[in-house]
Length: 204
Image (tube, rainbow, N blue to C red):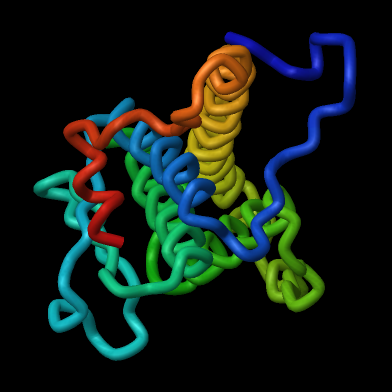
């Protein structure tokens, strides 16, 4: 396993989500795809009519599919994809032997924890998050929730790592292609042609 803390060099700065361009969206969705496919999940863009009001994604565990609502802007699309993939993978890490907290309250705490981790990593405002309600947990509940947090950290880390790797691959491709750009008049597209999952990116 590669741990960036074991390396030397320039400080690692994760990608910060602001106004997402079409090119950045493609790179991020590529990372999301790789994170999901590693756990035999996939994502699919679905017509808005299939979602309830205010709903932006659905997770189908039986079909191992994350459904994302079509028609959202680039920034909302990538934030939704990241959140949905992290949730699907966090739940996937629970497995049959999971002994952590369950139920509606556990899901609310999980959602807030997952969102805060992702927001902090991608440079979003975290000032609105408040975890004072966790102080009301009993010692037993807090002990059980550690297992929930372990699954959340595993799921979010996988998504974050795959997105970082996707950006790294894109930067390498740009660097490798730089001489070719100077040698011809056609320019260069740093993003590969649509692959089997490229069609889903086009739907966004």
